[in-house]
Structure formats: structure tokens, C-alpha cells
Length: 600
Image (cartoon, rainbow, N blue to C red; front, top):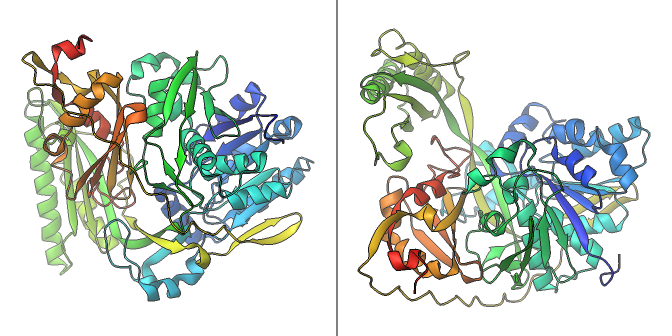
């Protein structure tokens, strides 16, 4: 594909393991695509797949990628000569590929499947434990090797591109960075080299926009009412990428949802941490100067990503067994519902602890009680009177599954002894579940051996050498504080901004985008440490960081130690901080009336 003659059209059909099956036929119907890419993996997913593989060595991959996504659509994929890239291999990419090859053969097709391996480092566990790296985010010590369930380096795009170069129609990987499935298609199609830093950053940003599927086309959008009537058939995103790394974002014709500055900007700031140090295996990205422009109906152009060089390490995540957790929702309604729910929770924990003492067993290592409906996520700073209907979410952690069993038995055993109003729709009593905690560190590229397996045979891929030094970060100058005004009013942040939040381990990431560029100075100075503490003080145990993205009139906020340990182990109702932007958008800030009215 000569770079000067063609753009590249890629459809993003999956944002997580469990995404809607309608995406693939929708994108196939749209036609005129070169690739469809699928992102199935997250830290929680890897923990689940590791548990599945531990029970059955033939499993450990996203089985529905083969059965529900590929099998019904393989004939049309072959007819359109589309190519597929997916990280559905999880912790067993060879098993995924074997199942897919069997399905292809059963349908009498000749699609060629390649596998990229090397991310799984579990065989090196003893050597890794001997080096005892610290957690890159928390500084925690390396866990006991006997408790480790999986170890995976996050690979990049170049080995996937090499598999495409060898003629693969479908490439399956294990753990790679989410955007690599898109960037690999660009590298293969445009012939980008490891030194094409800005193009690689642009292709990575295109992958970041596609990697969460309809989150770029109206899903989880702040202005959800704009798309509420069209979520039934929401369109999945399409990126049309040019050889310089700029791209257009659209969706299939006659589908629901929306592609706008707001929907794409929200996805851009989603879970990127420091926007000027978004480190991927293939390129260190700086998104602070990215520009997003609406150029047509449901058509947005994205440009301005900057590459700062090639990092020398792979982010590596291991999951390890850290005891057990369990919990349940207990509904209460009627007069004094909150007090009844809290009384019930207190009694359930007290009875459970008494039972543990009788058994000479250890106490719970953590207890979480959240009264959902009493604005627990807001720290109890309610806007109205006591709730008459809510659910008490009670959860505990214990080193032994039997400790969790004690809690579940004692809590449900209070059913006939509680205050009136206890209710709930439920089946069997919940069971203890193992906690697979997350530990993240860096692995030098030279310590990872990447293998490509396909119909041609096997190939060892040597990833490209890192840059001697990354280009230094030039931080944008923060905007000057607005002039002191006498006409100040309190308005909720949502009137001034869009927001999107997520997680990285135990760090909550909140991106805030000004609805008007001239409002950015007000947002930057209003959302200071004091304000953030007032909103999130009941969650945050670590430092708070803020980063500026002047290209999109946005800022990114990192709340360290804000998720109770993170998605794989937290007892919280929102262990991934997906609703944290909503908490911030609901909090009022002081704004000049003249600024709101557009008067300078």
C-alpha cells in the first residue's frame, strides 16, 4: 500500500471482553474498511483469564471472540478481504488461534492466522522475584512468588506489523498495549519506521480513540441526553488515518450515537495519565498540543500528536493472590431507611467478628460499607433530606475464604432480626471470591523474547532499540488567573466542561475539557488542590497531580491511592473510578456572570 496513494480505514469493534456482538456486522455492513481491530484486555480481564487458565490449561482467552465474533462473520471478512487484529489471546493466544483455525477450516475458508507471543513472563518468575522490583506506582514490595498467577509484559505494535508483513489475515496477540492493534495496521500499511516518532504518536492516538469502541461515539458521554434516544444502535468508531498520523473519526452511516469534539475529546483524555509522558513500547507520546476539529456531520479531525522517542522498557503487570473478598447488597426502604441500613451493617460486621473470634480466626483485613442512595459516593454531602430507599453494600476482605463465608452466613442470617424494610431481589447466597491483586513494574526490552507463529513458520522478533534519550518535556505555561470579579455565581462544573474518568491500578484519572476555550483559565484555577480535596477527600490517600492540555482546552487530574487498591482487589462500589468525573462535574465552582455570558 503506497503511503502517498491511500489513507487507511480502521474500525474499532471491541472495547472490553463482553462488548456487544453487533459491532462486527455493523462495521462489515459499512464497508470500505481495511482493518477491524479488537481490544479485549484490561487488568481485571487478565486476572480473570489467569484464574480460568489455572483451572483449565486449554483456556485463558476470550472464547467469544472465536464463537460469537469471528465464526458468524468469517465468510464476509474473507469476501471483503478485510484484515483482523485482536488481543483476544489473553494469557493463551495459541489456544485462541487453534480454536479460530479450526473454525476457519470447518467453514472451508483459507484465512491465515498468525500469533504474536512473548508477553507471558510467568516462566521467568523466579528470576524476576530474585531482582525483586518495586511496584512502579506505589513502591510496594514484590509479592510472594507462590501467590503469583500471571506475569505479562505489554508489547507494542511492531511485532504485529511484522506478522501482517508475512501475509497474516488475522493476527492474535496476548497482552499488548490497547492502541497497538491499530498502530500495527498503520506501520504495516504506511511503512513507518521506529524513528517516525510523530506519525507513531498519531497512530497510537488513533488507536486510543478506537480502543474503547463506542466511548468515542457517544457512550459514557457527559451530554448523554444528546444520544440517549440512539443508544440502541450506537455506531462503532472508524478512524481514517493519513501517512502523517493525523486522522478523521466517524461512524457507520445510519447508526446511533454521535461523533463530535466532545465525544472524541473525552475519549482522548481517558486514562492517559501524564498527557506529555504517555509511554508506549513503540513511542513516548505528548498529546498536550493535539487539536480536535469538527469538519462535518459526525466527522472529527484529530492532529498534532508528538512523539518524543522510543522507551526502553515494557510496562509489566502481574496478578497475585491476596486473600479473598465477598459482599452483598441489602435493600432497605421506608422511614429511617438510612439508619436501618447502617444499623444492619454494623450488626452484620459485629456478629461476623464475634463468630471469627469463636473460631480463633483472624479478623477481616478490610471492611467496606457504602449506603448507595444516601450519596455515599459524594462523601455523604447530600443535597436533599434522608433517603427513604437505598441499598447497603457491605463487603469484606479476609486471608481465608472461610472468613468470607462467615460474614456471608452471619449477614444473611440477620434477615429476620433486622429493622423493618429489608428487601432485595437475589438468588443464591454469594460466594467468596479470590482477590487477584495487581503489581506493575518495568521490564527492559532486552529481557523479553517475542515470537511470531504463522503458516510460514516461527520467527523471533527483536524489538527496536530505545532512544538514547527521550525529548525533554516542555510543560505548557498555566493560564493566568481570571481577574477578580464582583459578579460571581456558583454553577456546577458540568455547565462549563465535559468530563471522563477511569483508572490505572489504584490511581483515578479524571479528564476535564472546557466547553469553550476561554473558560480554561477559570477551570484550571478553580479545580485546585483545595477543591479536589473537598470533592474526593473521602477517597484519596495519596498525592494529587494536574496536567494541562492547551490544544484541547483540557486538564487531566490524577488521584493517587483513590480506588481502595484498584479494580482487581477493591471492595468499593466503583473500584475503577468510572463515575469520579460525575462527582467533579456535580460540584459547583465560582464563575463570573460576564464570562458565562461571553462578555470579556
